[in-house]
Image: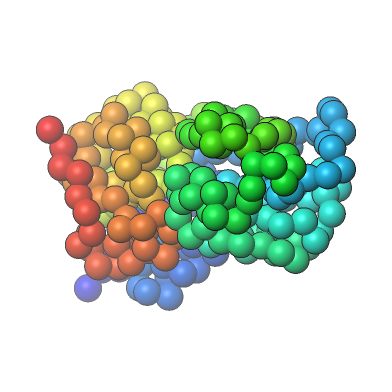
Length: 247
């Protein structure tokens, strides 16, 4: 039996672990990083009396460390990978919202008080949810610090293109709307629409699925929960999770 094969679109620094996890389940993963990350140095000093740090990505957690924030400050992380990155960066009081941006807003409501001081949100330049607006509506003061920007890939590797054209790929994994947008743009440019129509898209969340739907996939699957483990489980099970059928 031929090995199952998928494409992973995570940035190179995050793809290796995902490839290893899939390989352990008998699934070969071709790397097609759709984004490269560039750090942005902070321009303004932060207040010393911060209540908590909010991070919505591993790169955001690393950015929080570069800001020189106290490592004992409470850190509220959006999910497993982000919480792990914050701990690896040396933060000692990390709480995991175990979900998406809405889950993080709920966690802030439970763990923080508007009158207890400002929150700092360390993020990338492009975000899918405006946490500042969401939390200020609840009376919180939120300072956003942009720690990195992402650039979209300019091409797909010959191996990835050949695999798609030969029908040797069964799925593509997307972890962010920008990755899905970048892949769709390249697929259109390389005239891969027909090839993608025989392939399933596996998306971490509904916003990612909406962006992925710029291509006419065989099926779009959305993980039951917005975690890497849930997305891997969906791939392993062949897509027995929620489905967003093409029109």
